[in-house]
Length: 390
Length: 154
Ligand SMILES: [Zn+2]
Image 1 (cartoon, each protein chain N blue to C red):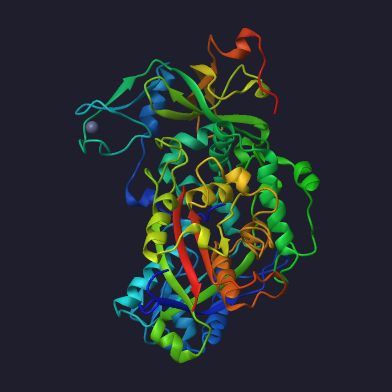
Image 2 (spheres, each protein chain N blue to C red):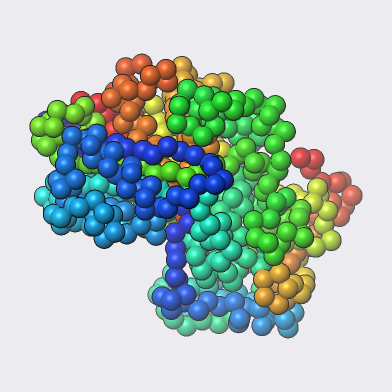
């Protein structure tokens, strides 16, 4: 592990709203994010005015309105990382550098949306100009009915199944594991709705190989976390969760999947070796992993890209309960985007912190000291953070 | 899904290349961008050549033959324009010249779709997304299905 004396960024506060799918709800992206932010700041033991850096999620709220609402009148750093669902962890990586440079002392990273009850997300998919890929998608994807991320990623999964023999049941093993974990999480949208492999296999096909139960759940909700320097974190007397290393990268080309020389190339494949190298740890040292599971195959894909196994071996890796609580490497103990909530991966960071604090109750990984959290966005942008309890 | 974030690329000034590409298709020709400076193919089209940075493009005709590199069959359309078409296949064809192109299939039962299946281009008018003549693909001589071996069962 990296030198424990080296100063590192620390996550000192986490906050979440209730995650829900209520048809009559009238949430706004902003109000949800403010609620989560206030909780995260309080959890850190900070005052709102102590926040002097903010990194909001692209297009879900802007820095000015969040800062104005929270009464943070000392902000000197504001930036948004544009990497889709990879942004929260990529923001954490940038926040660590900003803190090290002394350009801020306490950075708030919020994200969330009314993705279930709000009209915006559903309307978004009707207009390619508002999707990753933009003009390219409008000219070359949409005319053939290739219009949504589920379909764009499905072709990667399909090719993986062909090249490496990844099976339907291996995709199912991911969905079942996430649902199992959600049963232990009071805030999980799918708590109280257990799922068997038979349920999974019977779910309707949406875009082969993706069935309905291969897909994450549109959720109303937000989460936030606060990052500060190690010195400040120790003064606050909160449990220390250190960012041992964090990194982000894009595949090439970042805006088009089908013409990559290797269709399985991702940003995470570049970011992960960098992060593990700087942290001085190996994938086998991990006690848990929180992996951005927008679709079942993308979890399998990232298991490979993280270096937990070789490319092509992700399918067998997720089988046999290996990624479930009690297994070799528990993944997404909160239930993930598939069964807790789709909060653009913020919930993965929050759960990693909770595990390292030992606050996970019945879903606690025993002696959790080192974990990894990933983000996946747009057409395969990747981010990764290695977190430890110190 | 990944979060959907890129708003306003139109405003940034990229008008796209669809009009030119589909004008060739309407004449029954599949043409892709090729760099006059380094002769690399470039699909999807870019403003500058990613290989040599030249801005010197030709639309050059390709043979229109290739193989199915990967595919998905859409059973639930995400865009209302395609709801009447389900189930339909989206194929990624790797052309013999190298570039891959997103398309669909004609005269091919969905259960006959196969990885690496040889295909050839045909042109088909569609009003689903604008009124355009699209390059689509049908099974080419040499595909198992056309030899009578049947497609893979899924
Ligand atoms: Zn060139």
